[in-house]
Amino acid sequence: MNAMQLSKLQSRSESGQSLLEIALVLPLLMLLALGAIDMGRYAYIGILVANAARAGASYGETRPGDSAGIVTATCNDFLNNLGSNPAPSCDGSGSASNNHLQVQSSVSCGCDKGGTVASLYGGACDDVPNSLPTDPIPACQIGGGQWVAMVTVTVSGTFNALFPWPGIPATMNISRSATVRTSP
Image (tube, rainbow, N blue to C red):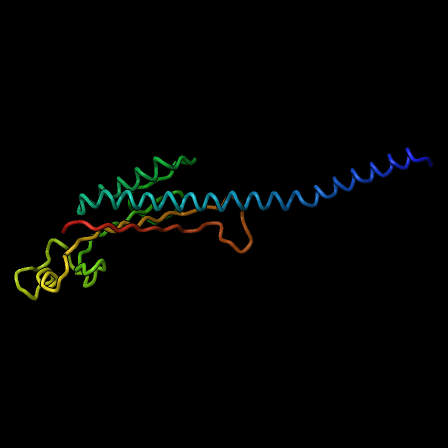
């Protein structure tokens, strides 16, 4: 066997080795790529849900009693930024089921002292008694606080993974809340 034949034989075996290396590494790389895609989708949906909650809270800041308007603002923000097939539904009712966004809003009020709201009032903010010095609003003001109302919007949806992953649920609930202060 001469040097040229030996060189061709080595070249042929090295190309087979490269093919074997690719065959062993490619599934691992594909698994990593698919995992990164699913993680990115989860993060993206989480951001969209959080942004929708902030949009609803922002609307509620100017109209705290308009729960239907808060739901509409929340849903519009979510649906305008998510184009999936089938189209998601969002009406503020039902549970956070497959491809459905659930929206809940509430208004609460309390005494703000130094940036921390304490002594939340349990009833409707419109019905807070304030005629006696011991009533919540006068007591808050006498104590150096400011009576504030807050709108909280909680948005829940589901994330469905593209691929089943061992030890990770195929469907995960994503829930985000946003709270803004408004005048009582």
